[in-house]
Image (cartoon, rainbow, N blue to C red; front, side, top):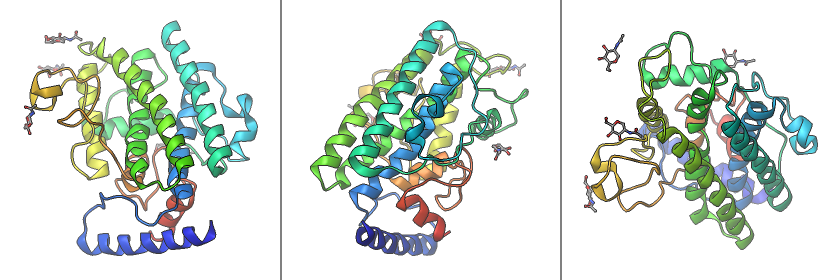
Length: 304
Ligand SMILES: *[C@@H]1O[C@H](CO)[C@@H](O)[C@H](O)[C@H]1NC(C)=O
Ligand SMILES: *[C@@H]1O[C@H](CO)[C@@H](O)[C@H](O)[C@H]1NC(C)=O
Ligand SMILES: *[C@@H]1O[C@H](CO)[C@@H](O)[C@H](O)[C@H]1NC(C)=O
Ligand SMILES: *[C@@H]1O[C@H](CO)[C@@H](O)[C@H](O)[C@H]1NC(C)=O
């Protein structure tokens, strides 16, 4: 893996220099990265989801359920058991267990790394939500307070994984990596659809004590992700203008997709711009305060 990694790092440097000169975020495919490097980008998200779901549902995460998979990475900061209704708790718990399987599959079939430092504190989410709505929410948004808040916080995450997987598949060379990512994508897309459906059911509800509905929050959160990633509209809320609805015929938007109802795709840089919350793949923050693990994330930090 050393040679592809070096090549990949050299390629990033070229792309990055180009970006710095042009000043525009890079939106094309990641070039000259190995399958190993590309799939590992997603492992950061799988850790994030596993811990957020497991601890949110059960009050305990990977260190209890499958400690070996954390490979000695530091425990997540700030996650806690959420105040969920019974149905949501069962669903989120299942999602958490599914993420454990994903971490095991990537680690055993591609190669893993230690769990990165995660910041899942309510402040971490509150910061993202404030950025999304454009003013400080009072009191600060707490993802763990109740079911609707937790689902809105979850709205941020599997969709990023989904579009990342869609963006990765065309760049993969080996059958092994392509088949693994296709199978991960299937479950990730399912999780996203379930979360969006649960939220759609309550789209017109006001998220107390804020003067914003569930639908309005989703639109703002999607807009934030589009702004952070800097590559156009690839993320849409639950209620959209008809121009963004399927076949321009509906304003419901249970699935976020393009004008042919094909999934949007994002590259690794866009993914890091979003989950770092900084809009800059070289500047860690947000849910990954020390940055992601794996060659692509580490290479981006070196060139920051
Ligand atoms: C977690 O993130 C929040 C919000 O950005 C920040 O205030 C807090 O200091 C972070 N916690 C740690 C331990 O880094
Ligand atoms: C939300 O309100 C709009 C406008 O009143 C209505 O058309 C729509 O059916 C409602 N959606 C849900 C999910 O209740
Ligand atoms: C709440 O939002 C509605 C619609 O956006 C607005 O008309 C109303 O004035 C707001 N109320 C408060 C108390 O801010
Ligand atoms: C929907 O509208 C967009 C422009 O907003 C257009 O590009 C697209 O072709 C339309 N799709 C259909 C099926 O009419």
